[in-house]
Amino acid sequence: MIKGLIFFVIVLALGVGFAWLADRPGEMLINWQGQQIELSLMTAVSIIVALIVTVMLTWWIIRVILTSPEIMSKFFKTRKRDRGYKALSEGLIAAGAGDATMAKKLTKQSKNLLDDESEPLLNLLEVQTAMIDGRDDDARASLQKMADKPDTAILGLRGLYLEAKRLGAGEAARQYAMKAADQAPHLSWASDAAIEYCAQDANWDDAIRRLEKQRTAGVISNDDAKRKKAILLAGRALTRSDGELPEISKDALAALSLAPNLVPAATIAAKALFRQGNLRKGSRVLEKLWKEQPHPQIADAYVNARVGDTAGDRLKRAQKLESLKGNQVESLFIVAKMALETRNFDLARQKLEAAARLEPRESMYLLLADIEEAETGDQGRVRHWLSCAVKAPRDPQWTADGYVSDKWAPFSPVTGKLDSFEWKVPLTALTGPVTEGDVSENGFDQAISNLPAIAATPEAAPVETDIAEETVVTPIEDDNVIDVTPQETETENASPSDEAASSENDTSDEKPKETVVADNAPEDVSDEDNAVTPPAIQQPDVAEPADEPAKEVMSIRVDDPGIDENVDEAEKKSRFSLF
Image (cartoon, rainbow, N blue to C red; front, side, top):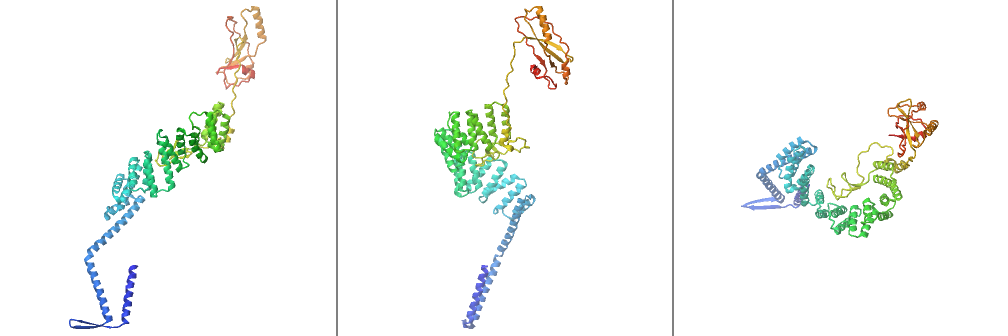
């Protein structure tokens, strides 16, 4: 467009000039070697213009003839390059689509039309074609070639890094990430990976230095930079030795100032302060965070602040936490836990039931089982609470990438990612059908309603040892039934007449006979069979020595649940079961 505008201006200028000369006619006289030429001014100007145009045209023709070989060479090179770029573009599309055959064909065509030294994308196409074709070694060799060139070094290092991660070569991935981060600190993937590797090696100072470079380069926001720095400081405090208590508390407090809601930093700082004897400052750190974010690990650190405290002292500190944040699950739970240690079962049960009504979970039912075991010892009630614990939701724990831990860590042990641990309920397996009495469905009130009553302690039956009896066996119709009747004995000084009188009295005052059914007795024994009893066959009287104690004779009957016994309660109580 600019060239067209210039041409239009030139033509306009010539037209205006010729019009100006036409309005001002004149003559031109030329004397040259005795010849005199007389022309009008318009004709002279026209001849001069035509001469200039002719010279310019002639020069252009001569230049074209002289430069035609170069022009032709450039034309063919341009045409070849265009064909090469077209093949390269189509090859990248085919590789992205997973068409290995077409990608290989276009890669070969592109290499014939383009120079791989001057076109970096040709190397990229070669790498992608090798990957989708399953030639991993060729792909890594091409990536290494790219990493050695200055203009494709970062691209090659990233490809090598991803390939090493895919193969699980952690050390190789570490080296590639570190090299890329050193060459280009503004690359987020390289800087993040380098920081994570430094954290895994406990090289906290280098990790913090790289993080500052990231923040300066504007790769991450200030809030993200503060959070990551707090995690790194807390990790450094966590890995310090016990002899560096001042440095531990300093790092943890610095982390807490950058991230005020970082619970691990608060507990690390408080424990270090407690070990230094600064109980007041450590308690203030925990109390401040407790008001904003109650957490069970804060509660445990607070109640165990001082070594040597009694259970009563720990209960008082737990009640202090409850006063700071009342009617809250963690406050009620820690008070119940400490009340159990002091054996204040009423307080423990009251607080724990209140907490379970707010948020029932596994640890609460387990603690209720401990309370029941310590207070009543009723195993039925203990088993009830244990069964509720099995059905109850799990307690929150530190979780990162599916890994569950009781302790916090600055990075994930699975992926190595920084700040991965979260305090939440771990993912559980899919549950089966909901059964009746499920705690998660019906809540804590249903568990209370299903709680069995306290079992009464059975009283021991009195044992009579002052009656001397001897055994009298009386057979009945059924050979499997034995009648055992007790008979009193007299002292050895009794006369024969007295013995006869005693025998008559025993016969007249005969007691009801008791029977014992043997194991192989028939299952149906009716009342009529028990009612008909033949005369008893007494054993011969044998005089016993006076110094031997009288023998106690008990009625013996096999306890068989398959036999229907239609006897009165008094007879049942007088029987003795062998099994």
